[in-house]
Length: 360
Image (cartoon, rainbow, N blue to C red; front, top):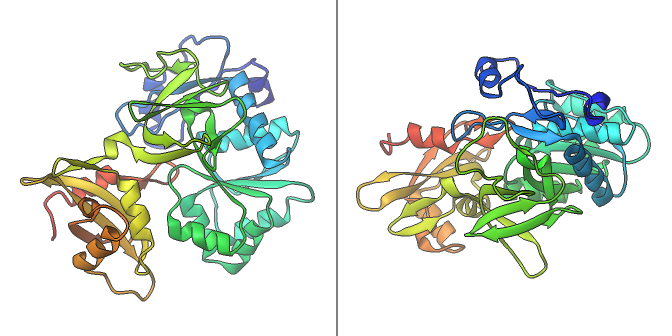
């Protein structure tokens, strides 16, 4: 890791699973690469072949140093995410920059392992980087919840944080920091809506565009149009807005948008409304084809313990009190778990394919 940050090595991390061969080919492992590229981090591959963000040592270091400045100084990190994902990689980079050794609980994330790891972190500032599903798992255990509350910051990235989980974490006094970023920006670069030092945010045609020293050089497997076409900037696939104070609100991925009855519905907003219903433990909103509307809004729900499934009419009323009635789901499905990919992102495409034909 220290050699990588010193610019003396190029690393192409891939998970040791069935995807390895595809990634090796897509990221052109073994072929020449620019001398200043320290690491190529595989993208999630949700839109096709993995592209691979080419990150320099300078970008990785800039991200780590800006994170420590925002959080109050260097500290010791809990490694709970695999190093071939950018969030896990950045825990390793931050640890090198802080001249410390992370405490690892990969891949054995559990309440007991979490408690033991936090207790072993010693004095000084202590941090963790998790995804929402890990935070939710910890919140089910009183000791794990208390352990997280002892830390100076718990970064949550990899996708939106459901309102119900955020409220439970706040009630438990867990110092949650919501992060937004991706492999192409060396990980999270916007914390609680505000860009880290040096990071710039613009909205172009409703798309979020990120700039600054943490942006990757480009893709190892280039695409067209090139989201890195403007030097120093990365055009994301996310829709958002920036208020007068410079705070970014992420509304969701553009390709997740549902076109229903001539209007556009962003699933993330509907999920936030559904999360506030007492019977909903977790949810995912997606669109399926509809002969009349073009697409109809559908919700998959994981029920809270001991709760009966709410009716479509009940949920439509609940959502309609918070959003335009167009956004209210016209169909619901109760599931045991929501499909996820990568480090915990919702797989809406899998749900859309599963329920394309409507109610069973």
